[in-house]
Image 1 (tube, rainbow, N blue to C red):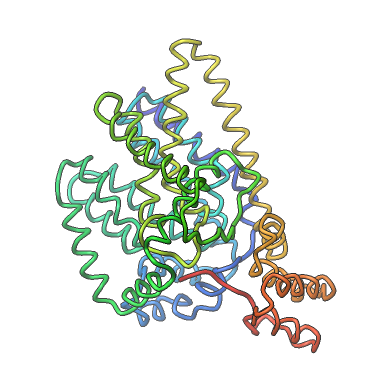
Image 2: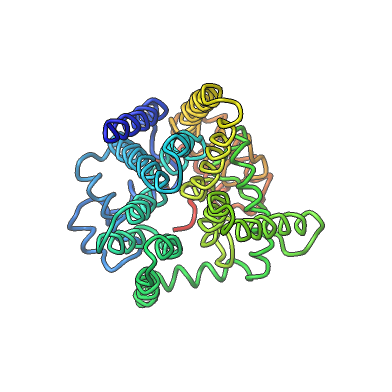
Amino acid sequence: MKLARSGSAYALIVAAVGAAYANALAAGFQFDDWDVIVDQPSVHSLAAWWGSMPGIRPLLKLSYALNYTISQGPEVFHLVNVLIHAVNACLVFALLTKWGKRSAALASALVFALHPAQTEAVTYVSGRSCSLSAFFVLAGLVAAGWLAPALFACGMLVKETAIVAAVPMALNKRRVTPFVIAAAAVVLGLSVPKYRHLLAVSFQAREIGTNLLTQAHAVVYLMGQLVRFDRLNADPTLPVIDAWSWSIAGEAASIVALVVVGLVLVKKHPEIGYGILWFFLWLLPTNSIVPRLDVVNDRQLYLALAGPAWLAAYGLTALARKRGSILVATVVVVLAIGLGAATHARNRVYADEIAFWSDVAAKSPHNGRAFNNLGYALALAGRDDEAEAAFRAALSIDANDVRAGANLRLLREGALRRDTRGRYSQEP
C-alpha cells in the first residue's frame, strides 16, 4: 500500500512537470546556447569532447555531446532538460519524506517542480548546469553507501557550485567523507589551467568588499523572485554597489537575521531551521565572495528553491491541523495549478530570440546587451527597421558599445549574418 501511494505521488509529480513544460519542447536556442553548444565544436561529438579534456565541467559537456549526437536541433535538448527536472522533483519528494509527512513532501515537490523561476534552469538549455548538478546532489542525498559520495563528486564535475553539498551530505550521512571529496576537488580543480583562468577572471571583475555589497542586494532580489513572477528576467544586469547606503545595510541585515533565525531554530524546530538554511546555503557559492561577471541570474534559485518550497508546505501542514485537511488540500491544488500556469506562460519567452530579448529589454530598459541582441535577432528575421531601432537603443545606453555599433554598420551594408557573431553572451 505504501509503495502504491509512492508510485501515485511520483506519477503526479511527473505529470505536473509534463503539463507545465509541454510548450518548452518547441523553444529555440538562446543566449549562451550558441556559444556553449551550437557554435562549440568540442561538444559536437564524443570524440571532440574527449579531445577537449581536461576542461571545466566535463560531465555537463558530455551531456551536451551526447545530446548533439542524437540531434542537433533544440527539441531533444529541451526534452532532456525537462526529464532531468522531473526526476529532480521526484528526488525532492523522496528526500523530504525523510523529514516530515508525505503530504508536506508532496506539496514541496510540486512547488519545486512548478515554480516559474525554475524555467531558467529548465527551458533555457544552458541552465542544465544547475539542474544536472542538482540531480547528482539530490541523488547523493537519497542514496546510501559508496554511491552517495560518488554522486556528489559527479555533481561537482557538472558545476563547481555543487561543492556546498558537502554540508548537507555530511549532516545526512554523519561522515566527513564529503568534506574530503570537496577538498580533493579543489586541489584537482586548481591543477586545471581553465579552472585557474576562470577563477582569475572572476576575481578581476570586482573587489571582494564591493562584491559582498552587490550580492547583498542580489540575494534580496532573488528572494523577491520567489513571489514576483512578473519580473522574472533572464538578464537583469543588477548594478554593482561599491558603497554602503541605508537600503543596502537593511538588505544585508535582513539576510543575516534570517540566517541567525535558521541557526537558532535548528535544534528546537529543525524543519523550519533547515528549510531557511538550505535556501542560503545554495546561494553561497554564487552570491557571496567569488565575483561573477553577471551579478545574478534566476537559475541560481534552482536547488535553493527547495527550502522555501518545504517551508510553505510545512506551514500548510500545520494549518491543516487547525483548519482541516480538505481546505489545505484545496489550497495546494490551486497553488499547483497557478504555478504551473505561470510556468507555462513563462516558457513562451523562450520560443525564439526575438521573444526572449524583447522580454529582457522590456524589463531591463537600461540593458544595452539586451537591445543589441534583440537587434541582432530582428536583423536575422529580416525586420531591419526594428533592428536598427534596437541597435540605436543599445548605443544610447552605451555610446561605446562596439558590437552594437558594428552590428548597425553591418545592417546598413546588408552584411549581418548568423556567422558574424554579433551578439553578447554571459560568462563561461
